[in-house]
Length: 65
Image 1 (cartoon, rainbow, N blue to C red):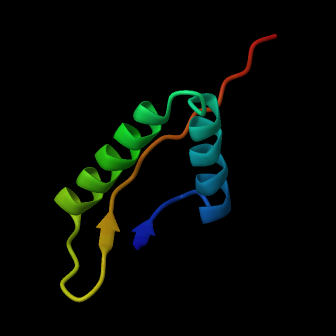
Image 2: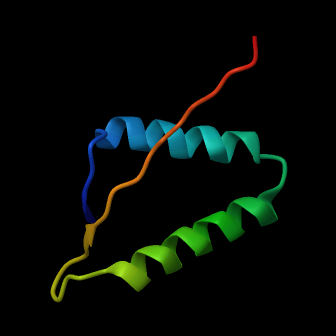
């Protein structure tokens, strides 16, 4: 999968893993998130012989103090 993004794939991976970890004890929610993300990627895929996603998004991480 290729995506145009202002963040690195390492940051992207870390954010996704954090979301999954937060829902670790709810495997149905993790599976639903995975299905929804796949459906979103398939919906906006502009590639023909490979996946091409050309979009922008804002990633926000918050923490309690």
